[in-house]
Image (cartoon, rainbow, N blue to C red; front, side, top):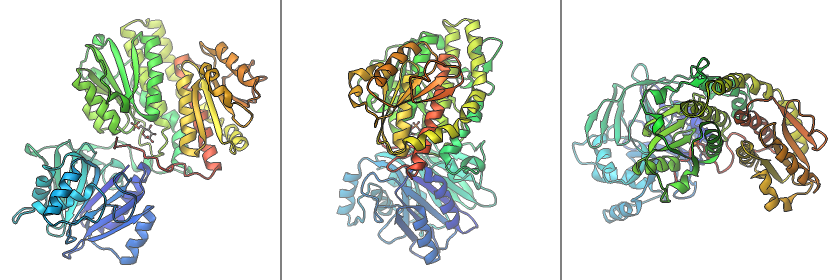
Length: 612
Ligand code: G6P
């Protein structure tokens, strides 16, 4: 969703800001804008609907100048993606500019109040209220930061903001509540700001994550951090461990393909240092450091959205089977507005790649308020969910740029397998079973590598099926969530209508749809329900459906019963989802490319959904 970049220092700001915006493109946006402090009494502001190149062209035609500025990519919520609604928003005199991620919940009240004081509104956005408020409250003798702090004291809702002003030039004020904002501490008088480390990492790896309620002042001399209620505070500098190569395509035509192919290494990374071969156990530092007694957990409630919710379903099956732990998996958006029953001993486990998803964060807070202990399975270090949970497990998958999640999903499943193993060993799992699981986990990255060798076969299949308008994905047990994820992936990137279903439920409805124009993808590796899936395959066959089956290596039974087989290596059932997911990712990718879709930034989707 929306992205923020800021720069103040000795260089021309515009190229740096544009580069930062491009790094944030993956989050999804529909307009972009920039404000530069250029020595005049008005700021230079350029905004454009559409892609960043439109903004870039507009900037070059007016020869924009200035060494301090802010920029934004907007994903429309209040008001259509038009030029007036694009950020930055400015004060009436054009001397204050502000960019904002989040939602001002009392925008209506503020608007009315400001109108009474003669302020005119040029956009339909909630954001514009903040900039007029800053203007309204900026008394003589105040610095920009004082006016911003005064305004924020009256704003309800969530924000990550960056503000500049011609009245107090060479200064950026940033603030956060609920939406991420970080400072990049550059060398030689350069300071940056970003809603995401990818925006600043080309210039510095030293970042300061702001906490909710913090604001900060950035000048070429350095930065100072404050809390709205507690005055000046110290926030430590952290080092981003991945480098800029991780957010470039590295020879791949799309980030999605790159990230699919990165899975052997992202899976090694999620397991690095965590497998205890001798004890058949997993070491999870984030939990150990908290010294939480897992023996107190009686029930786990997993909350997540989208692909992460699918990983949660796989986690449920694992934790029930191997740790004998009662688990519920909830859509975060539903959970947060119900009145969930959370008894003593409940662990609320939030799964999120970005660590920013508004619904997941809110569900977590709701669970905590009802007395649950909270845990996160998160990829983005320092993100809101990572910081808001009692403890957690990082995925260490590196930045995921493709909007449709791929490598994060497989890492989430493996992180949950590690957690299951650890939990299981505290409960019912014997050392022998534990060792078996450790061994299977250890082999997994190489097996994924093998599956990636099927890329050409899957591309050929995609060519055969690219014209189909509908797809059905079916699986049972551990493969049911994989069916859901396969269908979601196809929908997201190729815009083909697809549904995932438990294979046996098919006969209670979707079977009516089966004909030769509705290909069915069966997940049928060798596991506890293999024979049952065979019967479901027969049901589709009997109705003339075309079938692609993902099967285990060495399967001889299915070849004659289906149109195509995709063979994946064999492993223990709880880890098979990792292997069967990969060909479905490739299938979705190739179908999308063949249909000319924007694979990395599918229409209407955003990478981090920071609004509910
Ligand atoms: C968005 C993304 C999905 C993602 C979901 C949850 O909808 O497009 O790919 O699965 O959010 O995101 P999270 O960052 O919480 O895993």
